Amino acid sequence: MSELLYIDACVRAERSRTRQLAQRFLDRYQTCHPDHRITRLDLNDMDLRPQTTELLRERDELWREDRLDHPMFALAHQFAGADKIVMAAPFWDLSFPAILKIYLERVSVNRITFGYTEEGALLGLCKAEKLLYITTRGGNFSQPDTASFEMGARYVEALGRMYGVEDFRLLCAEGLDDVRNDPEALLSQAMERADALAGIF
Image (cartoon, rainbow, N blue to C red; front, side):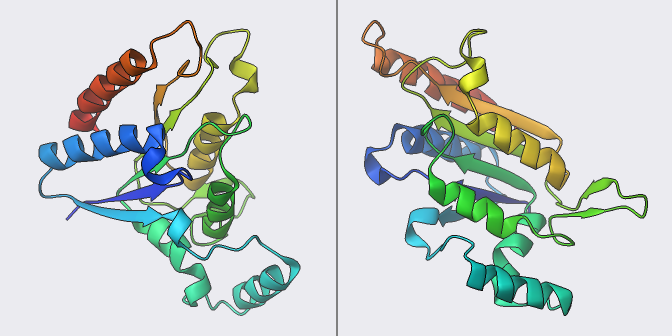
C-alpha cells in the first residue's frame, strides 16, 4: 500500500487558510486514490523541542554508535520511508513557522534521509518521488520583483533535492490580504487547483 505522509505546520489550526487548502487536496486525493494510506502529523501536537546543545550531544553520540534505530530518529525513518510527502505551512516572516524548521532538523539525519558517496557527493536516501508544499500568503511573492523574498517553498524544494525527492510541486494561494483582491475568490481558485493536482499526484 502506498503511503502519503502529511506534515501539518498550520499553527492557526482550524482558522488556518493553509490547512483548509491542504484538507481540500487530501480529501480529493483520498477519493482519487482510495487504496493509498494517508499518515498525518500535526506538528502542533508534538513535543518538538529545538536542537539544543544537550539534544545534539545525545543525537551525535547515538549516531556515532550507529544506534539509528533509537526513537530519536523515528521521525527521520518515517520521512525516509514515505512514498509521497505533503507539507502544509503558512507563509510566515518570509518562510514558514519555526515548528516546521524544528521538524526538518529532526528528519535531516545523515545515513537515514541523506548521505554521501565515496567521492563526497550528496546522496538522497528518501523513498518518496514526489513532494508537495502547500501554503497561503497574504501578499504576492511570485512576481519578479518579490520572488527573492520568498524563502519557504524554495527552502523546502532544496531540502527535497537533498533528500533525493526530485519531483517538487507547489500549491499556493497568495495575495489573500491585499485589500484590492477578493480573498474568497483567490482561495476558491486554489481549491480547484488542489482538486486537479490530487488526481495526478
